[in-house]
Length: 341
Image 1: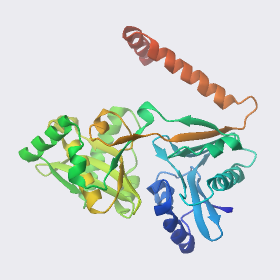
Image 2: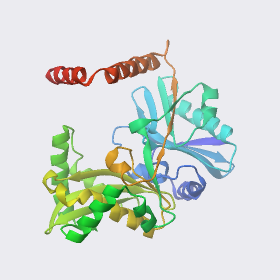
Image 3: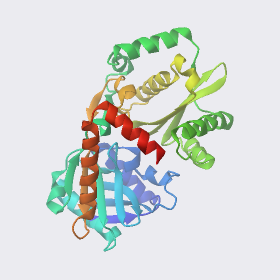
Image 4: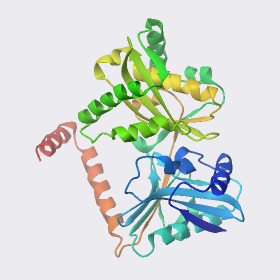
């Protein structure tokens, strides 16, 4: 096997081989496909892909970012490593590691892979293993039996809320079609970002996602002709459909626009032939759509003297566990003090 490193959208020959590989891989997502390079979010972050070839056939892929002295392939809720289900996996992993080391050379202190399933062969190459748990799990819906069956597996409260919202007919759900609708949604996005105290995406980023319909869909909710909420989705054809984000106006939540947005996207994904739907997380709002929890696995190689990154993480995890073990009153006191700093 051999690896090839690319840093831009691939040439047509490699693009064709890459898409041919994905349906038989363990995680055929948008971010493990060539579409990764069409995202507007990687400016200045040195995006790359390592492709593993067995003769002329791609059997493994990892996409990621090279920032300062770290190389990162994905997140707990967004694996960015995919391996063929019909290959010598140990050899694929060995070749992926060789490719990542080639990117990092001697400067990279920390290499991190996030994989959709346990690939213990990484440990044999010096990586430590950590399974995602709790809030870092992802709820996955099986769409293979159709939208009606998926609906029946929603929680009782979610089904009741949806039925009531559909009877009342206060909300119209559609895919976004015009730049005017996009502009309305962008104002909602800016308001949502301000409430969360985070920087909003730029208008140009939003336009790029809107235009990139080969990999993205945006569904919007309208009340009396006004856009009041929007949900964002990405996908890999013949692969996984993923719920990525939502922005909405708080005062319209009584009409359940966010519930309706997800439900209509599930119906659309079923119509398009997608078999899996990733909720992108596992908090209560998402769990009420049913499905089953999926844990990713992180493989990390700390190349520093005395493993300083591993030690920092151990201290941080100990602090979190200590905080969580405190009585509620003590936790609230700590929050108040931290808010004044």
